Length: 307
Image (cartoon, rainbow, N blue to C red; front, side, top):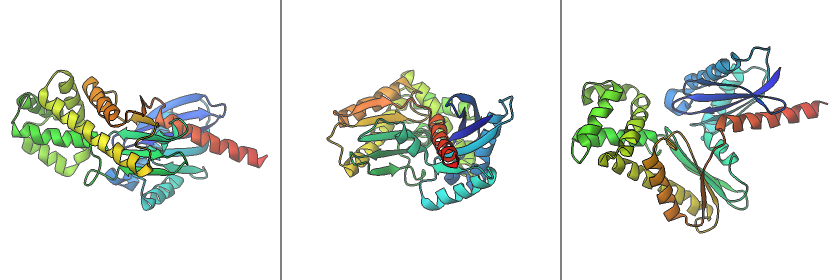
């Protein structure tokens, strides 16, 4: 059976979708993280390969992979893109490989015309285009100077304010975070974070989300702040594109979207207030499947050219 593979990789996991040449999804699978700026290039390439192996292992027929498209966070910079391209070509020898960013996949899923895709997962960023098709991005360059409002940012903020023990709901949030991380005290959290911050702070987001939905004032304050930061990222991009006052499509996606009713409402409210003319929606297209359909287009073009 001939098929193509599409990947959506980030700082937490890598999703893979296999589709046949008729466009039907034949398998799905998952592997570990594949953001090279967070875990290193070799580990990121291995994450993609493991996701592919897990996906293809579910197919009970011999498989010939014709093309691979990987949408990976952390590949926006040219040197990162080129190195991941080279490593994946080694992992998939003889198979055409195309590396995109996860943002490229989100924008690909948007309607035609002026549009912005806001992606809030382990990291955060926005990508958009104006009416002429010119594309720009904002953010997404790692937690040291970017990723505002992301799961990493929320988790780091929650750890900071919860450990201070000041404010309504701080004590309860502190207990929940420590229990969720399996740590006895904040010193243990600091020790783990110093070794692998991505294994600590993004994992705190679900705790904050659940606490906010349960009415914890401190958790709600943290998520309101994150919504403001994500709206600010979007606003900077809209201004750069010259579409801030226009009618445009604004899509939301990423691992933090749809996890908390409170956060979804906060983000929706902030975005609608800032962009009253925008059509705001959640991006429902699966990023890995979008990548697979790009790979299918590549494979179809190559087969037609070979005839």
